[in-house]
Image (cartoon, rainbow, N blue to C red; front, top):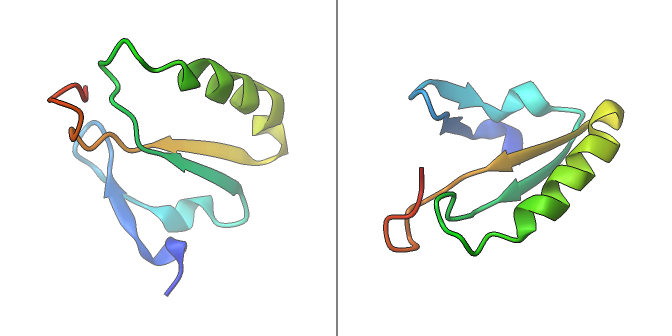
Length: 71
């Protein structure tokens, strides 16, 4: 089994197969999207802008384990 055998649900409730990202470099992160303590977003955005054209994709999967701070 590989990462491409999994699916996630996007923010609109649509099932998204990770097969769509095959051949790309993935960074998968878990963050509290509504939390004020997310300094990692700045670095992730910089990486994305610099490497997206070369195949980088960043997938943020909030799980709400941070006190209901996921949006």
